[in-house]
Image (cartoon, rainbow, N blue to C red; front, side, top):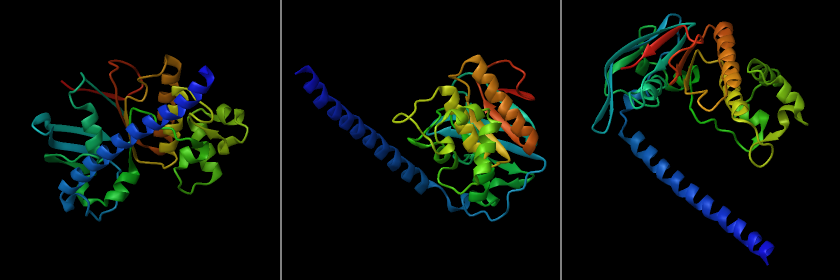
Length: 263
C-alpha cells in the first residue's frame, strides 16, 4: 500500500512543480514583453559594426529601478586584453553595471562607448555576439554535452573539443561513453557545480567574444574549482586579447589586472 501511494504521489508532485514553473515563466514573459514595449526603437536600430581595439567606456551613466537610484553619473574605462574585478557591498550596482554593458539594461542617462562609438549606434545583434554575459546561475539543459555548448548553432567538432579543453574538461569528456554526444543533466548524468560553470564558460568562449562579463562565477565553488575557472579565463584573455569583467564579492586575489571597488 505504501509503495502504491508513493507511485501515485510522485507524478502528482511533478505535475504541481511543472504548473508552478509554468506560472513563474508566464509572469516573467509578461514582464519582459512589458519592458521591451517601453524601450525606444533607437536602442536597437544601430548599423555600425562592432570594433574594439582600445577600450570600452562607461560615461556618466545613471540608472535606477523604478524610484530606486542605483548608479549616479558613473564613469569607468576597460582596456582591451585585461581582466577587471568589480567588487562592493550587495545592492550597490555591480550586476547592474555588467547588464548595462551587455545591453540587457539601458541607462537612464549617460552612454556606453566602444572605441569612441556610442553603443546604440552599433548593430544590436553584432554587439551581443561580441559582448557575452554569463550569469551567476549556471544553466545546464537535459541534453547532450554538445548541445549544451553550441545551443543549436553549427560548430565544428574540433571547436567544441577545443573550448572544452580550454576550460580543463578533456578528462571529463573522455569519461563519457559517447564523448560530446553523451547526455548530461538531472535526468541523465548529474554533474558538480564546478563542472556546470566550466561547461557554461566553454559555451561562452566557443563564440569567441571580445568581451566576457561574469556575475559571481565562482560563488558556489571550492578553492580548486575557483582557481581552475580563473586560469581558464586568463588563457582565453591571452589567446584572444579579450577583455574580461568579473563581478565578485571577493576583496582580494591576483586573478585580476585591476580592481574596481564600488562605494
